[in-house]
Every structure is written in structure tokens, then in C-alpha cells.
Length: 102
Image 1: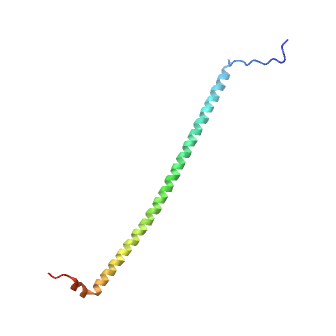
Image 2 (image 1 turned 45 degrees about the vertical axis):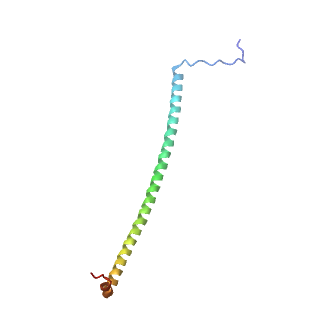
Image 3 (image 1 turned 90 degrees about the vertical axis):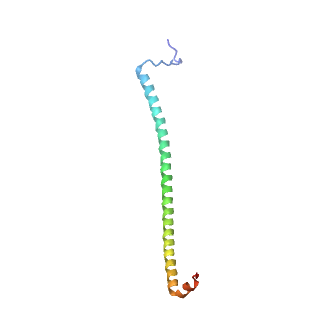
């Protein structure tokens, strides 16, 4: 008679089905690790793209501000040149007396 308290001994993996299950489990584990690494890399690339877009937006804003300052400076220069020309036209006698004689 067999002892009812006896622990069943594990059977060695002899069937090809068991080897296939182990190989598939290892492949699944490897695929999961690869997927996790690629997900992390994707997140890093997304962060880089977001940072680049933010930098481009800042540069565009700075360029717009500088272009406006340039336009204002050109307008101011033209106004001052017109004002200077008007002042010279209004007082021709001062211009002639301020010239050195040779």
C-alpha cells in the first residue's frame, strides 16, 4: 500500500511540450523587456522633441521682437533724417556761416 502522506516527486521535463512552454515563456519575457526599453526610449525622444519645439518657439518670439525693434529703429532714423533735413532747409544762413573758409 502506498502512503497517503507521501509527497509526489516532481517529474523531470521529458516531453517536448514542456520545452516549448519554457522557450515561449523566455521569449515572452524577452519581448516584454525589449518593449519596456523601447517605451523608455520613445519617452526620451518625445521629451527631446518637446524641448526642441519649445526652443524654436522661443527663438521665433525673440526674432519677432528683434524685427519689431529693427523696424522701429528704422522708422525713428527716417524721422530724424527728415527732421534734420527740414531744420537745414529752414536755416540756410547758419549752414553757410558755419563752413570753414579756405
